[in-house]
Amino acid sequence: MSVIGRFAFATLCGLVLAAIAHVGVILLLPFLSERAAFTRLQPTHETGEPILVAGPQTRGWLSQHDPSTALTACAYDLSEAPLRVTFTTGSHFQSAAFHGRGAGAFFAITDRAIDASVIDVLLMTPEQRFEEEALSTAITEVDDTGEIPIDPLEGVLRVTAPEAQGFVAFRVLAPLTGLAQAASERALSARCTPFPLDAIAD
Image 1 (tube, rainbow, N blue to C red):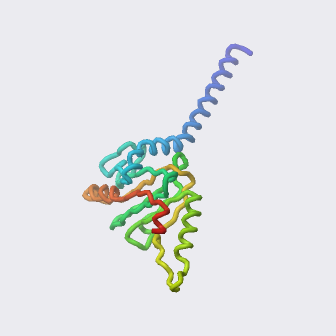
Image 2 (cartoon, rainbow, N blue to C red):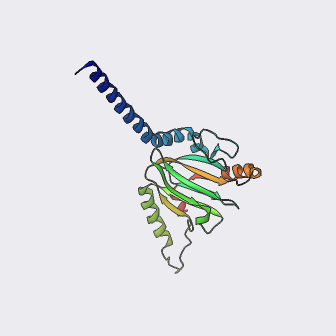
Image 3 (cartoon, helix red, strand yellow):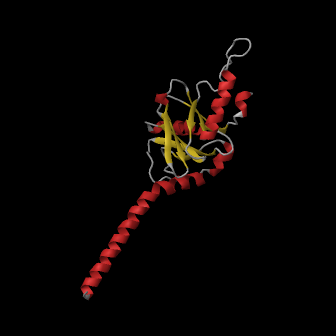
């Protein structure tokens, strides 16, 4: 093979490797960004209160953000207990999206999808879901008086998480500049509280 031929072959190999590396980075971005978000949100795991990630007037640490929304988030670890997520709705569009650690969003709900003033979700692992169903069934069985006890989680949406760790992102629309502060405050009002299943029997 001539010098020119060897140079052309080496160049072609370099271009192919660069293309593979580029595609690999693009495919890994969602995975890496989810893990980076979980790490940044670790302090919220202790408090149960979300932090402002980005607002209508603040870009925050997101690479992409809708400037007309306020975004808050909190981390969770279901290995300790299920997570009770509550988010009071308002007059403007709101949503809650549940993300795994590196697995992307696996569930989302908006205020338009519920017939209540509060988005109320109990997030569990598959094992915790099985235990919760067993406890709820035992509690709601007819007792000796013939009365059916009230389900303590009536109206709460049960969601099964694919992995124990992740985070919940809350979004509130601010269609006008003057509503930016109110949207941020409402997004910060969401709560992510550990909910031991023993509380069902109390």
